[in-house]
Amino acid sequence: MSETSKIEWTDATWNPVRGCTKIAPGCAHCYAAVFAERFRGVPGHPYEQGFDLRLIPEKLLDPLRWRKPRRIFVNSMSDLFHPGVSDAYVLRVADVMARANWHTFQVLTKRADRMGDLLRTKLRFVAEQRHIWWGVSVENRKHGLPRLRALTAAPAAMRFLSIEPLLENLEQLDLGGVGWVIVGGESGARARPMNPEWVRSIREQCRKAKIPFFFKQWGGVQKGKTGRLLDGQTYDEFPRTFCRADPSKDFPDDSLQGYSKGDAAIRGVA
Image (cartoon, rainbow, N blue to C red; front, side, top):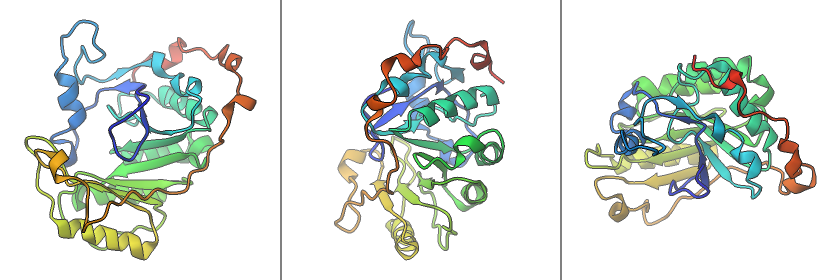
């Protein structure tokens, strides 16, 4: 886990899974894959195996030890609902999120169908906990809109969209049931361009729907120079958070005893 994050819409990252596989146009220039592959073959590095999918059970309990409340992006370097991650392991991650309810957890996936199926069944116990936010990536209409429909059909107290990288105009989105929208352009050497009118369209749709709008970046080859201003304004809007402020009163340090991070049930890959 990283106690800080450069990702503008979160405070920290937690990666009990590392690595993923590309499944859609939004994955084409994946920042996580580019980063991880730089270290393939480096002995002892967390990404010695590059971006190959791996479970990291020794990271499971980190949020329970982290007592200062913060927003936590779950699996910034993977996808919790990747088919290679067993249901048993997903449930362990969810159990930690349920226990560590002084944090706000931001779960983001491109595997929306599996997430929806589990929220209706095995994950129903966390589906409506308001400190856990469930989100999907939306990069275009063909791939993103089916994820949006799967998300809004699933039971969840808080749903959000990460429209990044925004690759085309997304007019007339059905935002019913969505509680937050993030928009951003692609960054890096091969970044695909983003039209400002596409961003303005989503901003206005959020305004009409009374949904918090967060503009992350214009992106491009040098995202530091292109910045985050949209029509002269920075948009850092967040939904209201629902988390317990002081975990120390009823979650003492010794409460972790007996919660095994070496259980065989969490070590297998589906």
